[in-house]
Length: 119
Image 1 (cartoon, rainbow, N blue to C red):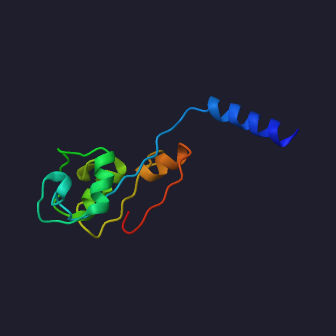
Image 2 (image 1 turned 135 degrees about the vertical axis):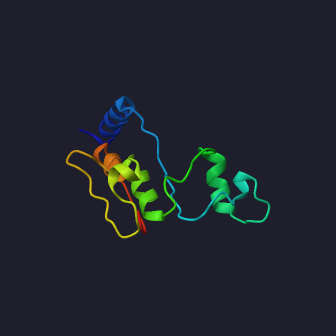
Image 3 (image 1 turned 180 degrees about the horizontal axis):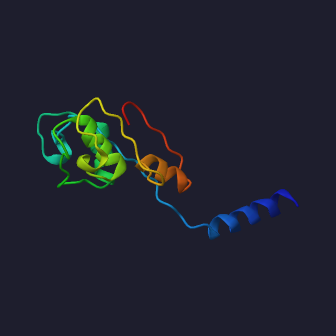
């Protein structure tokens, strides 16, 4: 197979593959909505503003619990803190067999996943 044939075959195969969207999911503890993209006039966050202008902004996203660990566990598992049993900042999230966190779900769908910090 020549290089030209290989490239043509690769392009044809790529065209047949369904396109998946890129996903960038930012989770920040204690940020609140004090960002220009939410109307704040004081904060200077040009990089977040550029991302927000191209993405989806959640206007009705609420904290699941008044502590960071239960909320983070809830966001990552899709379950309420009372269901996960994570009700303080010292309990580890342990899921039942077959349950996945959001990053593991994306990995199983073939996405490259990177996490940083507490996530």
